[in-house]
Image 1 (cartoon, rainbow, N blue to C red):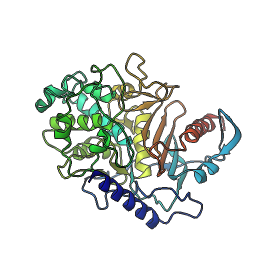
Image 2 (cartoon, helix red, strand yellow; image 1 turned 30 degrees about the vertical axis):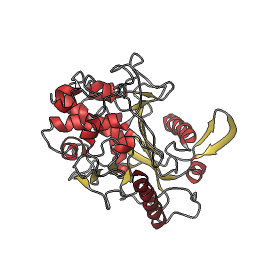
Image 3 (cartoon, rainbow, N blue to C red; image 1 turned 90 degrees about the horizontal axis):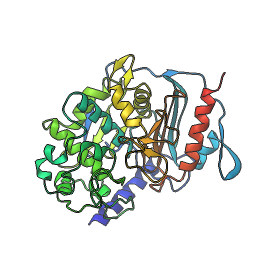
Length: 386
């Protein structure tokens, strides 16, 4: 039954892709998935701001070229856009849009699925809740969720979940049909799954709490359950709207896809426009403030994006903060990173935000190596004297 559901999603995704009118140059294996998932799926809606924060039109980016370490060739931004399954590309310099392109029939008003960029959005809400005294980083999961006593997560803290270091034995795979924990909590794949009950049944541990980094969206799903518990039953999209979406000046509604139990897919199923993803990046670049008004505490943004080598980390860069990825050249730089080509790159040093959405056929986006080099080239170009 699970495999059938996954295959059905794949067929529907391809059908959506054909309907979206891919341009002639597009790769024929680009998926139609990630486009307007709120259409046809249960979801909660975060309303936009009455007066959106304006993103101004700035001077054009101009030609950008980049090279790879082990490749003598030079590539350009335009070549990149035609080589890989990119659906949207936007560059901010401060609050000015210097480059914006939509591909494969996407339009500025389309809502594009965030994939795991959603994890970083949830982390921003956790920071607000911490400031409000609703949560603390050192709180244990079983103290917030009594039904988790005796589970693999009982002794984990909120921080352990944020750092992907719960120690629970979890299997991570994005392969269609795989019986993995990250897929099991995905409302687009298993809309009838009771995520809280599913996770409470987990008993096996692979490591002690807070000692080993092991990426799995099931930990984010649990973090969402923890925050929802402290919200007293209020859905997380309502909290998002009140504390983040409207205060940051979102221009268009945001959507969190949910399952039939009302649990939002906080680990990967948020959807928004390219412009509003850029506003999220701008918010992080400005230490949680917009127009001089604090939306997310500055000290929380610093914690999210701080490279802590004394905490469990991936074996190689990019590293991990509090549900945010951190490049080797840290300094406040960070990225929201999702499968198949979803990225928000945030560089407070160069004052640059880059939003990239994609629909690559593989979870490990085949353009990553090029995209990271292109990111650095754009930041250098916009930092150079003009």
